[in-house]
Length: 329
Image 1: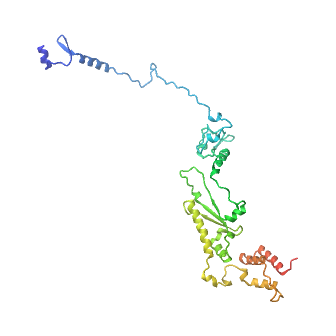
Image 2 (image 1 turned 120 degrees about the vertical axis):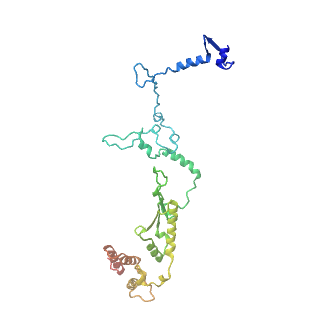
Image 3 (image 1 turned 180 degrees about the vertical axis):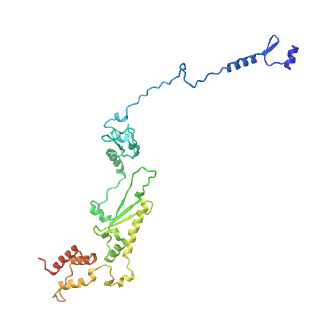
């Protein structure tokens, strides 16, 4: 024991000791040695497939796919409950044989609705069927007011509301919801509804220029400068209001205009009126009633001078002159 004490250096051992001949070893050291020997035996990693090597394959089970919903739908179903609002196209839900797409080969039908990207691109209105629209209209009736009296016909509506407002809305597939063309506003109005005097009407026509159509007596104002539709509408109404009030203004220098300064031929301010009335009142005394020139003759004379001489104007002038002289058969 004295030799063992000198070799270890400490009389206290942490594990039981087994003496074999002249050597000793602890139980923990024996277990560690056996474990180290087992770890030296590595498993073989085969990169190439060997015939004797078995590969475990995963079994793939077949998933039963149910038939499309469109094949199980009833003919009297509530379509508003199936497709309540706008959404992308679903081929398994729509019971219609829809086709869309371009094909290069002849005598081939376009692709069907399944796996068709063209049907999914465009917006659809499958939620706006006639029964659904009727149901929505019935729900909105409680918020509507009766149609006002006195607007039963188109003529009465034009009489009370002479200004026509025209705009457009677009449904498109773009990153932005605002279409550049939707901001354009068109305002149309018949000039006769403004009740302008001859001076104001002449000035009004000169201000609007080509926006007035003399054949239909319609003034058309198109605005597209502002980015929003409401802004363009307000600008169009401002232009219409400014044109109306500006045409009513009479400048001081306009009062001194003579017949030679007029931009157009006015029958009432020319010698033609005096000459035609003198012919009609030939031989009458001062006490007798005098006749005035017919409005048809005055209109034809103004048209002849303002529009120029052409076959139509000359023929009309001839007919009115014959009637004025009483030579018509």
